[in-house]
Image (cartoon, rainbow, N blue to C red; front, top):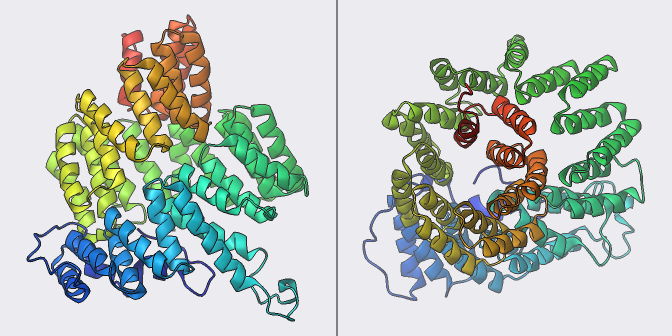
Length: 589
C-alpha cells in the first residue's frame, strides 16, 4: 500500500491506519517470507502474544505477527488493537485485519482511524453495509471538527478554516484510500449510502459521488448527480465533465459531445480539452486532432497539446506519428519517464523485441518501473526466458516489499497468459500461505484454474467465493462468463451476469459477458448490439474479438473486419484477438 492520502482531520488517516509507529523497512522481509512459528504463547496472554508478534516481525514472519497481534488485541486495549490493525493491513493479512479492526472500532467507536481501517477491510470483503456504517461515523467526526464553536459565527467568516467544502475534501481523500484497497463498485455504494442525504449533499459532495459512480461504471447514477448540480449552476465544469462521461458510458454519443461543448462554452480551454477526450473515446481521432490544434491557436499550453497529440496518435494506432511526437517531447532534455515508456511500447508493437527490452531496461528504476519490468517480462516469456523474466519482478519485490503482493499477482497472471498456468497456480498457493484467505489471491486463483483447463475447479472456486460475497459484481460476472464461455448452464450464467450489471450497468467486462452468453444461446444479432456497447466503453481486444465474431455470424463481414482492424491497430499482440481473426480470416497476416 503506497501513496495513502491524509484526511484534513486531527487524526491523520495514513498514520491511523498504516504507518504510525510501524516502520515499513521492519516489514521488508515480512512481505516475502513466512517462517514457521517458533512456539505459540498461551492463548489470551496479550503480553506474551505481543512479544511473540514483535519477534515474528523482526525475523520476517508477517503472518505470525499479524495473527499473534490480532489474538492479543482480542483482550487488549484500543492502542493494542490499533497496532494489531496496522500490522495486519500492512502484511495484507485480511482475516487478522478484520479481527483487529472490529476490536479497535468496538473500543473506540468514534475514532477516525478505527473507522477507516474497518471500512477498508470491510470493502476488501465486500461487506458494503458494514463499510457504510463506518463511513457515516467518519462523516460525523469531520462535521464535528468543522462545526463552529458556539458564538463563533459561520465557518465562512473564518477563511482560515478548511477552504470551500471541507466535508467533500475529506471524503474525497477517504475515497482515494478506499479505492486503493477495494473495487470501485463497493466503494461507490458505501460512500453514496453514507453521504447521499438527508440532508441533501452539497454540490462538491454530489460531484464526488458522481465521479465514484463513473469509476464503478454506473452511468445513470453519475448522470443523476451531475444533473442535480447543473440544475443549480448550468456552467459547472466539473458537473459537465461527469455528465459527458456518464452519457458516453451509456452509449449516448451526441449528448456526451453536447455536454463537452457546453463545458467549452463556459471555459474554452478546459472545456475544449474535455471535448477532445470525448471525441477520442468515440474513435473520432481526426476531429480530436483538429480540436487540439485549435486549442493551441487559442493559447493552450503547447506542452499539454503536444502530449495529448502524442497519446492520440498512439491510441489510434498511428505508431510512426506517435513515435515522432514522443521523441519530440523528450527533445527538451528533461527526463520524461512516461514518454520513454510509450517509446518502448512502440518498439514492442512494431515487433522489435530486442529494442523494446533495451528501452524498458532503462526504466527499471524509474517512476514507471513496474509497467516497464512487467512488459519486459512478458517479452522475455515469449522467448521462454522464464528465469530472466521472473527475476525482473522478484528483484523489484525484494527492494519494494510493500508491493510484494501486487508483484506476485502480476507474476502469476503473466505465467498463465504465456502458457504456464500451472506454475502460476503454484505461485498463488505459496502466496495464500503468506496471506491466508486474501480475496484478490483467491479470485486470481479461480481465474487461472480456468486458464489451466481446470474448468470444474474454477467454477467451484468462484461459487465458493460468491457464497462468502454474494453481492460482489466482479465475482458474479466472472462466474457467469466462465459458465458462458464453456456453454455451461447458460440461463444461470445470464442471471449471474445481469445481477452484476444491476450494480455496474455500463461495465465493459459485464456487457461483454452478457453479449457472449447471448451469442452462446444462438442470438448473434442481439449479442452484437450488446457487445458494441461494451466495445464503445472498453476498447478491449477480447471484446473486439467477441464483437467481430458476433457480427460475422450475423452476416456483417465488413463491419467485423473493421472492428478487428481497429483493435489490432491498438493491441497487435492480443492472443485472443489474433486467434479469432485467424479462424475467420486464415490468410490474414
